Each structure stands twice: as C-alpha cells, then as structure tokens.
Length: 179
Image (cartoon, rainbow, N blue to C red; front, side, top):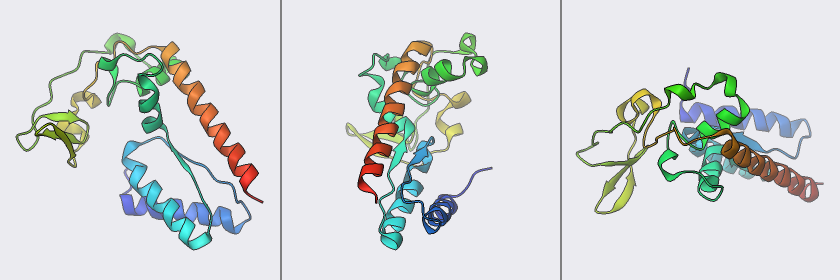
C-alpha cells in the first residue's frame, strides 16, 4: 500500500498534533523514504504554523548519501538499490541480505529522450532536472545508477553510527531548547 503525498502529510500532522495536545513538546521525525521528504517537510511547516513548535526531520537516506563518500563508500555503489542503504542493511540485518545476488548497474533507458542522471533526474545541457519517474521505469529490479557489489557491513556501521549520533544530538538540542 502506498499513501499519496497529501495523505501522508495529513497523517504526520495528525499524529504530531495529537502528541502536542497531550503535552509532548520534543518530536523528531525519522524518515526512511526519499519520496516522503516533501510531505514530511510540508507537515513540519504546517505544525509550526499551527502550534508554534519546531519539529525537525532526519531524512535518513539523504543524510546517509551525504556521508557515503566521506566515510569511504565507493562511488559506483551509490544509488537506488545500492549504497548507502545496501551497506546499512548488511550491517543491521545481514540475515535479510543476499550479497551473492548483487549485480553490476544495469543500463537505464532515456526518459523524454534524455539520459537518466539518477533516480528522478535527467541531464539536460549538463544540468540535472527533476522528472517524476516510477521505480519500474528507471530501476530494473529496484536498482538504479548503482553497482551494489562494493557495499559492505563495515561501511554500513560507520554510516549508522553517524546517523544515530546526529539523531541523539538533535534530541539533546530539543531537550535543552524546550521547556
């Protein structure tokens, strides 16, 4: 089941609104899906307007993506179906992973006659432009723009440690800033 962006935003607003009404003043939204970034951010803005409260969000894979190269990740493994998600999964749930089935990046056909730069982006005159794409259009088997074979649990452990540390630090700041 997939929620529409508008419904997801409404669910977040309702859940957080109920938490606020019961006295909770420190909320951190942890989002694990890039497609949910817009609705999460829109909900946080609306909650600020309605309740005068700042509710930060940690968009896990955006944050992890920014850490990928810094923490030693291979450039060719970065992308949908690859790192950083793959290495984190190998670290946290190796029992659910099948590294023997990892494969090289599959060619992705053009969208609008233009090359796909990464999931949801085409390249035009050297500039990446966002284009709404369905996974099936550009990610055969869920993998787009990545060769997941270089991913490893050690890299996943480094990413996980940084994300957990950042989340804990944000909660400490919320505690210090909220009466």
